[in-house]
Length: 301
Image 1 (cartoon, rainbow, N blue to C red):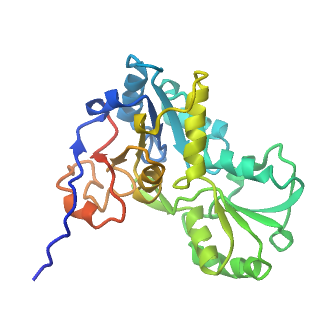
Image 2 (tube, rainbow, N blue to C red; image 1 turned 135 degrees about the vertical axis):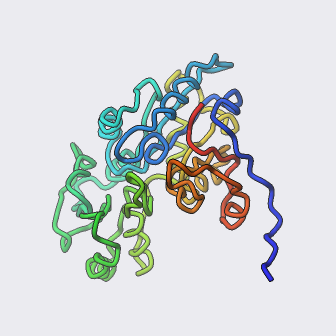
Image 3 (spheres, rainbow, N blue to C red; image 1 turned 180 degrees about the horizontal axis):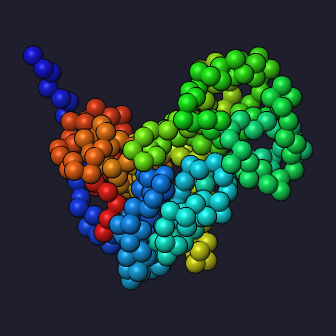
């Protein structure tokens, strides 16, 4: 006999952002999986954010801050978004895990840093007071990802992680994501290596979602755009496609949140193909450790 599901409050499925937009002054929007799929922009998402920004404001203008776990400074992310075709009119500012990592690195001037990750992420160190060194000389490790995320797994790094653990070398994880979606495939991220290091007893500081500092920084940015105080959290909507980072982080900070189904959880939700439509998600949501406030198939107006 199949056990009955536990009691739970149903999570509403909405048709688009327009159904709830009037309730909010600020949107904190995830990037990868919401605005683009790692190859091209989701046109409707950019259009929805533009329409939100154009809504008449109440006590303050409507603002959008993109909040990304990308392990590079915000200008690099903007360049990528431009290339994918995400309109700049869809957002007011960008905050990345790379930005937060840079702030952490300023607290240890002159430190010997080892970069664990692909060369494309090296801009995270630009103009900082530090020395990039080999793995065996590291005082701090900054992990931005796997060297080859098409073939490798966290297990490939275990011998190096064990050596750092033996010397009690701290790690900064510049991208807490475990995986992201790239054109329908799930690609491993720095969070997997950080988890493996923690499992060995290593010390890890995470820069980005779902941790509180990124939300505090994003609200500060939103207020500063107009010379105002930080927005009231109940008037801030967090949008993302990942329960573990986007939804759990927003919920823990007290922010209303919206889960985009056609993203990292698309296969679990049965919408991995364009032909599939979002069905009843209640049982799937009931099995999760965190619940969104609402769910939308894709970010559209």
